Length: 154
Image (tube, rainbow, N blue to C red; front, side, top):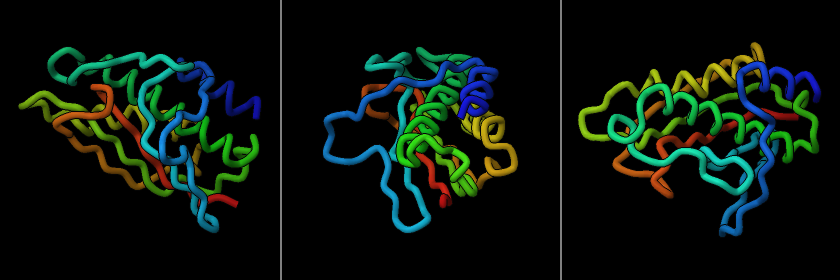
């Protein structure tokens, strides 16, 4: 586990400290050897770190930081679901990045790369994944980015 934390920290992101939100859905749901991770927003502890539309209040650099933090939060919940053993990740299958975009903004892939780079750094070859990065008219709490994932696990 230390190596995963160290690798995440080398990406410039502290290991997340999150608590399960009081919402009518779970952060993760495992069905057989597939682990679904609910959309993660850029939060640390119980604070939302970034808000606003990308291309308006949020610039590309800040959106990239937001995407990286969302990816770290995905990793945190995977770690929780696998009892602290990220070696049980066989493969990140799919990553979806939602970008709260101002009209005319179109660099969705560039923002999505922030989340993808974190996953590739932390999981190596097991982090190579299929991906979608799409623009949205809005996201919960007006966050700039939300990331969800599907993992193959043992």
